[in-house]
Amino acid sequence: MKNWKIHKDNDWLMLETGKSINGKVVITSSVHGDEITGVLLIKNLLADLKKLSTKLGVQISITPFVNLDGIKETLREDPVSKKDLNRCFFKRNPPKQVRKLKSLLSGASFVIDIHCFPHTKHALTGLLFTSESNKEISRINRNAVTAFNPDICWSLDFKDLDKEKKGSMGEWLVENDIPGIAIETDSPEFLNNEDVVDISKKIICTVEVALGKSISRNNNISSLKRFVVKAEQSGIFIPLVQPLQHISKDQKIGKLISFDLSKVNVSSSVSGRVVFSKVAKFVNKDEKLVGIGIK
Image (cartoon, helix red, strand yellow):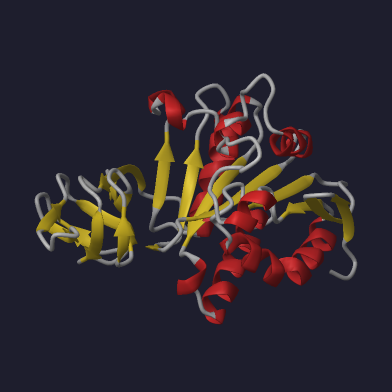
């Protein structure tokens, strides 16, 4: 971590480099403790981000272990507060990690929040946050998502989200007119060195495009809405589809085997493109199995 300032406070680590002559970029990872792909990516990115900071004249701040206690226990939630930190950004008294994040994010020129789905094969996906009141924020975010991966993009409308899904960092960024996107990748066990290098390059390109220092090559991105197939019962899930595969309505996409060895077929009620699929493993009732992008 040569040439990076290290700010450490018990369970909080923040790395910082550069001066904010032309703005500040913030990269966050592991707000969910069972999502650690971002740690691998950040470790690989440090040298290139240092160069990018000098090249663009921006300060870059990184929080690789937002939910460190959750990482230690492989839990999505913060085990101390028992809260999903990515649903607490509008709470009156949020957990300390969220308070620190909000302070760090304030005044940022661009934010990237790195996620993955545990034990899941996932196509590289950018989450597009749009603002009805600030078209410039929407433009920056759309260009950034396009730079990251023009083939797959979740389009999130926070007004349509269920109550239990509200309160995220993305929603807070939009409310506070801060440009930023989230990205989703494969779970770490499915990434090799070449994958890590490739995703790292895409992140560098995304930052350059977001700050207007590079031009996105494809502005005709196809925004998709997320449709998730969940387990109707607990059992061992066997997937029959792969990310990026096109599927049709009523197509069989997997099967669930219960502990009495009975089998239940899992089908999709929509047509679209597979974005993520749980690998063969035990799942609980209502657990997410397959994510499908629909137009």
